[in-house]
Picture 1 (cartoon, rainbow, N blue to C red):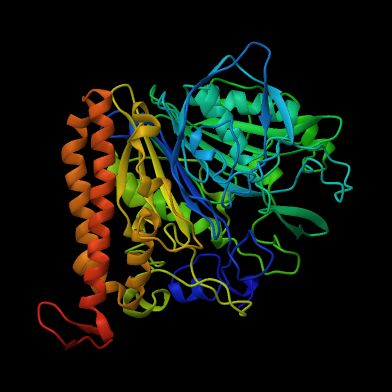
Picture 2 (picture 1 turned 120 degrees about the vertical axis):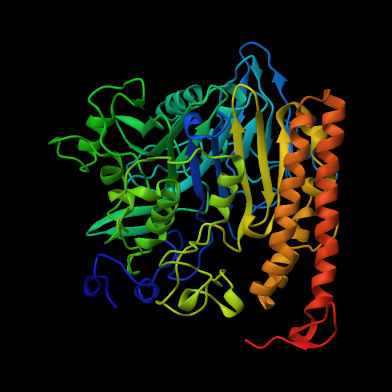
Length: 567
C-alpha cells in the first residue's frame, strides 16, 4: 500500500503491517540503529508522591557499562573540557571523570576535547551508562532523539560548508552538565537552554541522517528531547534543535508536565503552541520567534507550534531522501502508552504524532512497577498487539528482527526491543530518590535499584563490565542478553514458564527489601545494593543453563524428557 491508499483511521493490524513502518533514523529503509522512548511523570500522578523520568536506551552499538561519576571540587576560574560522545565502546578514556575511565593500557589514546566552557566550583556525582542517568541529588533524566529542520555543524567539520552555526555541546554532554550542576529539573532545563544558546547544540555523532520534506532538507535524529524529574515532584520536557546564524546558535523550549500527568517522547517532538512570553511552566529562548521566521519555518501568523515548526511533517518526511515516510514509527508508542495511562479517554489512533496531546492525566496513581510495565509494554490487547496474530513471530514472539534487503513491509515499532541496551527509571521525591536500572531489554530483564548515596562503590563488576563484541559470563549484560536471545526459540513457553515468573519474583523480592535498605548507613546500603546485583545476575545465569536443557531440540525436557511442542 501507499500511504494515500490507506484509511487514516487505523483499525486492524494487517493494515499496520502493510504501512511499511521502518526506522526514521538511519541511512536506509530497514536498518534501525537508534531510537529511544522517554517518559516524564509528575509526582501528583504517582501513588507515593514521587516523580519519574527515564527511557529505554535503544542502539545497535553502545557502551552500556554502568558506573558512577564522582562529585568534584574545581578551582575558581577553571574551564570544563567538552568532548563529543558517539556512545560506542569505550565511550570515554581520560582522567577527568573517575577511575572507571582511566586508560586500561599504557599509551592508550585518550579522548580529545573539542572545546571548553567555564567550570563551576563544585559538581554533583551521577550514575552513567551509555548516557547519564541520575545524580546524587535525585535529579533523573531520559532522552529521545527527534527529527529536526535545523542542524548545526559539528566542531572541526570542515566538510560541512552550510551557513549554519557550529555547535559545541552534544546530547550526552548536555545531560552530563545538567546532572553535574543541578538538583532540580527546572534548573536542568534552564542550564541546558542557556548553554545551547551560547555554545550551540549538536546531536550525537553518527545519528543524524539527511532527509527531505518537499524540496527542503531535513535531518533525522538531529534534534533532541530530554525528560527530567526531581525530588520536588516536578517533571519537565526539553526540546532543542540547531540554530540560525546571526540569531541564536540553537532553538530550545521546555514545558513542565502538568500536575497529575504523564508525557511520552518517541523520536518526535511533542511540545506544541508557545505562549508569547515564557511562563512558570513554559520556558524558551528569547529569539525563538525571530529565529523561526528567519529560517523560513514560520510566517508569524498565529501561535508558534514548536513540533510543527521545527520538525518535518511525519506523513511526508523522507529519511533518507527517497525513502517511504514512516509516521507510525513514533505515533504508535505514544498512542499506546497514553491509552494505558488514561483508558477512559479512548484516544483514537493518530498517524501523525504531532496530533496527540503533549501529555495525559493519569487515571490511576502510578507506582514504579507500573512505570516498569510501561517500558515492557508490547501493546497487549490492542490492534497492535505484538504477541498475537500477524504482528507476532513464531510462538508469540514480540521481537522483530531488523534490517535485510526488503524496502517495505516492516512491522510495528515496539517500546521494548531486542537492541534496547538498558532501561532507566528515576523515581524521585522528598522521601525517596533512586534509579531503577534494567540491563538489556526490560521485557526480559530485572530492574535493580541504584541509590545516589551509594556512589561508585554501589556498582558491581558485573554491571560495570561488558562489551557487545566479547561474550563473558562475568557481565550482567550477557546474562540478560543470553536469556532473551535463547527465548527466540520458543518465546511463549519460556516467557510464561520461566522468565516472566522470575522477573515477577525478583521485583517482589527487591520491593520487599528496598525500604529497609534505604534506611541503612551508607556502607551497609552499598553492600546490599551490590548483593542484589550479584544475586540477580547469578540467578539469571542459572536460568539460562536450565533453559538450554529444558528446550533442547525444540522439545520440553522437564519435568519429563522429550515432550513434543508443535506450533
